[in-house]
Length: 522
Image (cartoon, rainbow, N blue to C red; front, side, top):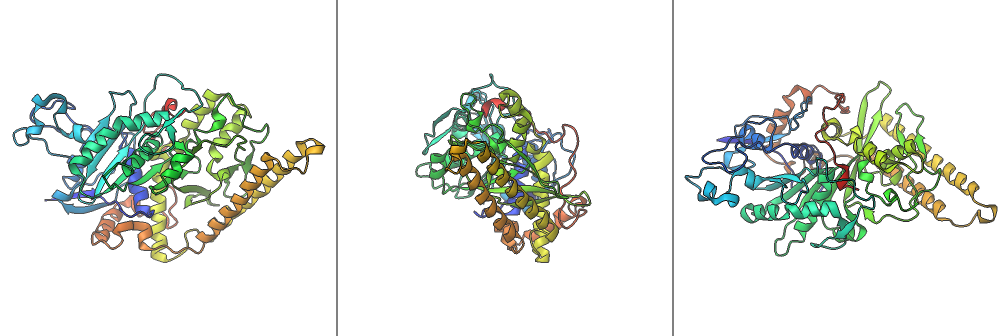
């Protein structure tokens, strides 16, 4: 018997294959497991609900059927890259047969083993509303974490309270830490049964990405286990402090951020309504006067510093609108806050220097560019197609026109930062002008980082991709070409331009895979 399974690279290095595949798996984590009956089965189980985690792995792929739907509201078809494998090497959903397996018998009560018990976590014990699924084959243990998706008890204080990360060093956001602790034993129980030196690949979107970071670091530090997690997160907020981040430096984490997604900018100290950490008038919207229509923001100057810190190597989706109206997306590493936090600062601009906390947070978490099927998945697909074409043509990662648009926007932004610096200097009392001031120092540092960003952009003009950049550990796999042939047999993967324009977004609420809960982030 033969089955299909999603291809995943087990290499540390970032690759376009994992970018796309794990975006799909992160979205699937918002679905139900779909088992009937969900609890206390007597003699058999089924997975009729589509899409659902159980239906994909136990029905579709085990039966050698391709599936593209990972969200109930999804309209656009995004097929994973599947490889054909022997049935025994599929992503496994454990069989259920009480006559053969004593651990499946209903009389065992709460410890009765059935697929949902082993593979699906839905926290109803500690009230964190965390959800995740886990599966494995001979090379990979896959863990995908949803995070919160329902209303909680009430808006928590905007200080974003921190607690000690007991399984490592530093402090973590309390809400994320509670969710991590709630699912930790579930994951360890599964690994105790099925881990055989596979690569543990963890992914998550938004709040699930923050929880995934804590889980990955907790597993990496688990005593006498030698786990080496590989982590991909999408639109994740900051989860822990600088001490945690430094202590987790050995953890391989690829952090994916959409340019128009404000959620990765939080939590931050300026959300603390008890502290005046922003400069009146310093929040400035920058609009680059180019055909691309790129938008940037100055970056809020943080006089008081930021106890929260991002972990991982950022990969940033930069949108570009070309003259013909085509929407393209360039993946790069900008390295400056002005670009990374532009969307959050635009929201601040709309509310003035002292934004209403509740309205601001609701706006941040309702941004279209935060959602997976409406934003991250199309951008990941476009990146995979762009890199495939670049590899085939041995051309640069950005076209000359794209480079010109981006470079002009960065230069315009740098000049506007200088203008803002001079404006703030003129506001100071005459006897204080010319003296070192933390506002000016912060803006000067950001100007320097913009220079670094321009250098990184310049390097994209000359970078040539290797097969491993696109397909990771599958670069020389015998299954790669048959898998690509199967993937390209679908019209959706052939019809768009070689520069891989981003598919047009679906209007309305489609693609919004969950109703985000602000409460666990602030």
